[in-house]
Length: 81
Image (tube, rainbow, N blue to C red):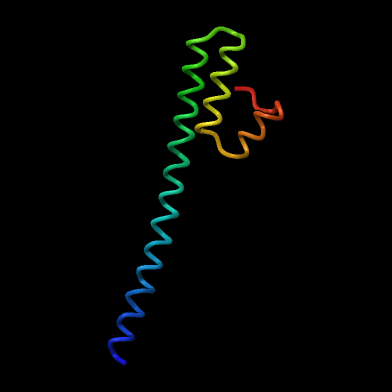
């Protein structure tokens, strides 16, 4: 019985650590993706003049680094980088 209690405590601690670690990971990756999106859009502005190539560059950047909300805004025409 004593061993079972120790095993249960270890499992509970592992679950808590996993949840906390996953939460931090999601926040870090989201911040990284937003930074990369901004850098990519800035590069698109530097590389292409107004036109189809620039819009395609924006589209690819948002598709790769954007959140679902940003992708929907881009498709709807509300997002203007």
